[in-house]
Image (cartoon, rainbow, N blue to C red; front, side):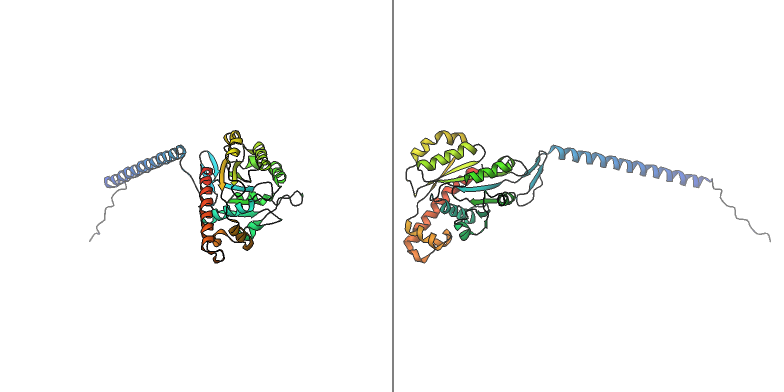
Length: 308
């Protein structure tokens, strides 16, 4: 019996051709789909980039005096270099410096590093801590003060200056081009001089001299020490032209009764501790409390103006 032979379909059969055409059509559709997808992606990316470039409100911020990145360039968050000065001795400069330390420690959102530059009597350092950094005419030590500026790059600094130091500090400004450097966006340090005055002729003349030299580059605050003078209107009239020209701020620093003042100085107390000291009695504590509220209110007004 003869065997049956199975017939093979030719490779070019209609069914194979249909399958091949169908596959090609599918591949073409996939390619078109992929191409359209890629085009859509490119258009979306271009749109995002375009909107980002046009949006100048976008910022990248970090913490602690950090850099904000904008279309206009790099801008460090502003910090402050607070210099407590008076040039003369015996004007109440260190006592005011301690009041300012109390304010920043207890009443303000701004935190400061405390530096005592008074090598003879660093009482601010003894009471409020911080660092001792000296301005020196000695070339070997003249670079020590640079650390103050380095600290101010990341945090505001409060510096208690000694008497008769203006020439050394001014030399530091000039030698390092401090005042111009402080204005640079990546530095952005506002320098403030809190000038403690008795209201006497020589004290006011020293203040005028400071304004004449640096009034346009340093924010000056005249501390009118009421412990030495009750009436300051005549001083205000005398300084009217300079006040308007250089936007001078003024602060009345109240008088504290000698009994409580001497006790605070002798015991090297923070004002926060003096307000609860049993040794001065209930009325003494009340006088300290009134004194604190008064200088806190005065300093707060100045700080608000500094931040405008």
